[in-house]
Image 1: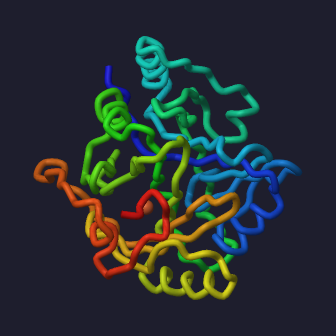
Image 2: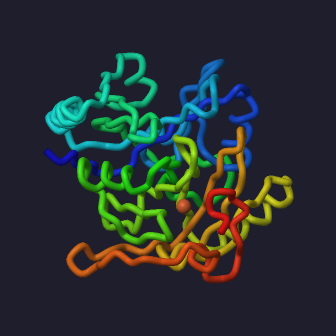
Length: 285
Ligand SMILES: [Fe+2]
């Protein structure tokens, strides 16, 4: 039975320095801190109560959470994964509270990265109160490192309900809804999150953040530029522990009836139609 994912829901990151990561997430990235604890902190970027978090630990141990429709879908997902040999565990009461979800299961994707499927991410009564005027409208997608993009694409599109929107070389961009992509599978000799995207309101927000990031000497690793695949205008930059973050605006929406996946060459102009070259190892051609 296909696992029906509704949307991407959250990321959870680990760091040896929660204070420094918190400073970055608020003062630079602009998210709203919630659930402040000594060794852990959650952040809001949109109407949901937690779309990102930092806790003390090894930065290579990342988590991506996806939303399923209800408990029955979650139970079926657990059965499907277990039947395929995946080790599945259920979130504890404390873990569910930290994530602001009613239930979740955790397992490792075929490359070894931790994935969670969750039900009922809690919505706040208001939108996020951003820590700075970054124009963020919400958490939107992740890049996932993939040791074998063909195999991992099969997992996301055959076991789950993701669809291929485009491929750049062997790097598939997968959608879960009409939004061009929610997951990018980035070929690499490792697993976990490659980048975290937040959408912003306008190209002015991208440019304003580019100036602010430059002033604060945050390493800009790609852009400003425009993806020919999704049409989004973007800037990518490096946060704590080498994690890459992206702001973008204007991502294409896909008509499920008429859209056909496209193949782009693995070259700089497939990543940016304005001529920017990625300073990201896995996207270097
Ligand atoms: Fe992206």
